[in-house]
Every structure is written in structure tokens, then in C-alpha cells.
Length: 287
Image (cartoon, rainbow, N blue to C red; front, side, top):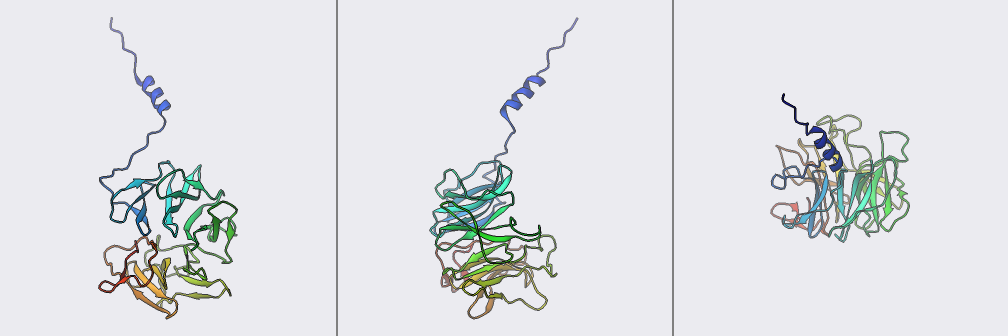
């Protein structure tokens, strides 16, 4: 009489429970899905496989700064390039964190049930700029806040609604998008909530809008560098890089991609609007 050997399935199941859920490691030989670039004078940071990475500007010395199962996003370098602020979905919620560019344990700066999304830094590097719907009256809008890197409560900026934003180098003004991007759902959207960039003057609360063509367009991702506000726009077809001079009130196109859009924009490294290659008319430190 033959007897059946005991099944190994219960043992395997027990071992899997002890080991915990498996985590798929990113393929470093196939890195075509790098996203959300941030740039400093010496480094470039980016998101890959939902983690934060940093490398030298020439692409060498790639280092992974986070390994948590939570999703990291929206990295931005501090003005001195020594610290990266980013949003992370740790403990079931998205909050603001900072981490040294050399690595280490991230430091949490916010703890609120609403998502806090990093947008930039104050020019003196003392605080991180972020957007959040924590005080908004509805789920359609977010507002802008700063939180000290040294720790403390966030301060809401005197701007009714804001999403992406960037301080001028002298801190006198803020370029910001009052509404979220609708073109993610509808390409070439031209409805009433199309993307636009407003420039807020802090001393008298005056606001002016970056000029748009007749019929409107989507202007997004403002990055203030020197005397120029760089941004993405679909005003001439696909999203391309543009620059706006708030003194001359002029917009100029800086890239001409016709096949794929410019999906993200980062600026930094102490460069200003004078750092333009006269042959290509391109900023040297725009990622």
C-alpha cells in the first residue's frame, strides 16, 4: 500500500509569512522611467521605482537615498545644494521630508492627514514651500505653505489658492499656478480651469498673469531663475520650455519638441538668466 508524502505547501506558506511581502528591486540596467528631475550646482536628483535617487551632473555616482515601500515624489534641492526636500507617503500619508544629499535618515517636517506636496524652498534655505488642501474649503483647491527646516508649525501664504510655485531670488515675489493641471486628463484642454501662472508681489499683494495667446493655453511648473520665470506650456502644440521676463513682459520659447512633451521641470544650481548658451539659447541648469 502506497502512502502519500506530506505536502510542503504549509511549510512554504509559513516561511513566506515570516519573510513578509516581497519587494521588487529596480533594474538599474533599464532606467528609462526616470521622473521628476531636480538639479543643483553639482547633482541631479530624480524619482525612479518610487524612490529618491541622486547622481552627479554627468550621471556618475548614482546613489539611492530612500528604500521605504512608500512612494517618494517631488524632490527639490535647497539653495546651497546640500539638502533635498521631498514628499513621501510614509505611514499611509503624504508629508514633507528632508534628507542630506549625502544620505541618511529623512527628517519629517509635516504631519497632517491631507497630502503635503513639496514645491520649492525659500531663497534663504530656511523653509520648504509646499502645497496642501488642509485649509481649503473643498477638494478642488490647494493652498501654499512654508515649514521651517529646523522644525515648527507651517505658515500659510496670503495667496487664496496655489499649486506649483517658486520664489523670486530676492523673495519679493512668487510665481504660482492657482489651479491644478487639467491637461493630464484632456490634452490641449482650453476650458475655464486651464493652467495659468500668476506672479504675486508680496509687498502690496498685487498679482499679474503671464501673458497667454488668444484662446488660452496651459502654463505650468514655474521656476524662477535670475530675472526669468521658466515654465512648461502647450501654447504652440506639445509642452515645451518657455521663459517669461516679468520686467519686459515678454514670453519666449526655449525648446521645440514636437514628438514628446516636456513633462517636468527643475531649476537650480545658483544659475541665473544670464547663464544662457548664445548658440542654443538654452539655460545650462534647467533639468
